[in-house]
Length: 242
Image (cartoon, rainbow, N blue to C red; front, top):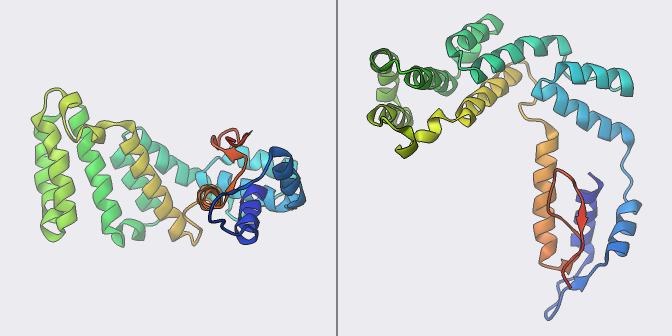
């Protein structure tokens, strides 16, 4: 992430001008970038942290063998965590709940919000599969009592049940609950909870660094014109408009 440290350095060295911004050419920018030294070991640790936290077991094992970088997480524990995540992503919520309890019953016992979201996801899957009566019964028996104890739970329950009022969910204002992204959101929440229970960081470092990179770039925009990274997936520098 040499670019991030370059941005930080530039923020401290460029004084804000009242009438114009300092212009940094691509040649100057690339020279400054080449002067920022990042150890290969640190980059390898960053990659391994992402692979292990996100659960890419095979990739993490291969990267360990090729780079000699040891993960902070026991790779053997990732398999069970990924089985839970995959179950949620496939809509098998009850199976996911059982797997979580097999790993550590305290995870759901001590996290009522996570348990509610899993139950909410189960309700969504019942609605998705057209099991209207079962969905209404499940909502009344399992979710409504929790909604009575927590206003935010009640609001989420009402949004979910609203799906039943529309035959065509494309016209439903809460139709996004049936999107795959909702499953992924719940799966990520479960994944984070399991990591926390195992005394690991719940989020990989790489996305946070990318957010810091974007923030630093926005801050520098106020002081200078310089080559930008507009597409993080390629990290290609684009010449500044002159």
